[in-house]
Length: 81
Image (cartoon, rainbow, N blue to C red; front, top):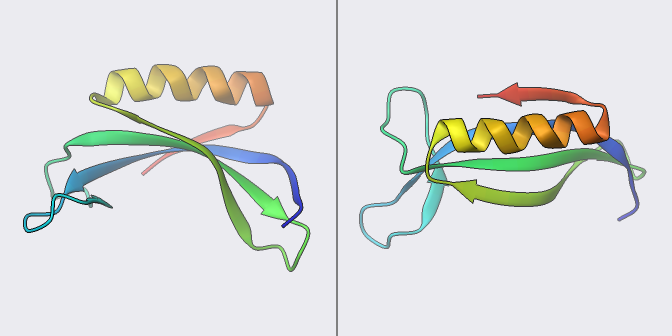
């Protein structure tokens, strides 16, 4: 896939699943085990989203610090959900 410029930097909470300890995104009412920061681009094929570089952090503060640096470097918005 050919990707265009980075559209946004996202911060999202994740948690380990109970039975196999895999990571999955979690909602606001769940206790996160960590935070993921990733780049999102729009592809040249049909405008679908493509996730770029991804990194995990143990705290929201650490994730936000990294995300703010990326957003500034790429001149794009930062979204947290």
